[in-house]
Length: 335
Image (cartoon, rainbow, N blue to C red; front, side, top):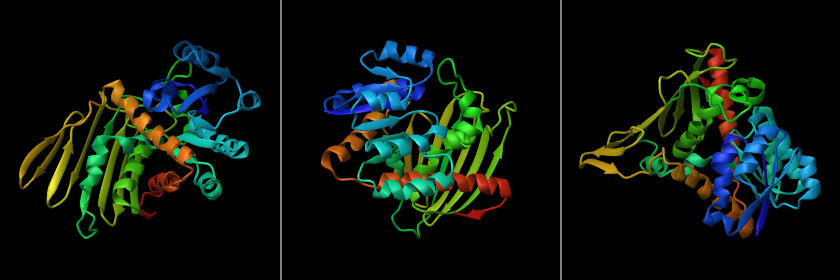
């Protein structure tokens, strides 16, 4: 049985990571035995839901008392680089929430070290495990001469408040979050675009504050990515009247349209409704983490390390930085 420690027990840990570790598929081979968080109220809430875990206020204290095989970094992005370094020093496998790190400097510095390290590193890019996005990817033509247009639309009313008592503050603090909605939510769609289309060649990006002018970061972002296989357009806002998601993939032989609840494929053969899980169902939300963690544990137990996940994390940070750089320069730039 593999033993792990989760670092940070805020909302994403309590609603995604920790429930996934209790799923029978995961619980038969791994367990979270320790948790680290220095906020007493957050720990109180976590302890009430997950009482079978030892809680510590510092990483050093946890490592001095626990013998763990892996750490699950679920703390805010500004802590990731130092915690990854600590995991490397301690010789443990590392699961890490997105974004991988805040700066391209940290990405360039840690990428070769993690590549050579014998331990497994995996970013929490759980959207790749969604049947919706796997269907999208399966419909992208292999032939780069056949171009596709991919569009993502992500609407939210505000930055996620997390759980008491921190609220939304860290997500709108650029020193902790690295940026606004582009960094917080947009990175999901950057790695999805890379996963579906391959290497990005050029990026055009704009960032705005259209509603939450009190935020220190952007609440809206528009991104255009150019690939050999086509174009990806990503529209994100925290300034909507409601939460909504939609997407489409279009080329000259078919189109896939996702409206947030239904996925429909249109082609010369007609229209086909493709069954997809209800994204609002918490079981389906946790299932993405279960699938990802299962892959992570599989690499550990098999002893076969696959750096493709690390490569994707590294490229997503470089692309995220390019998006912000393009917005700053107000021009299209090469990635």
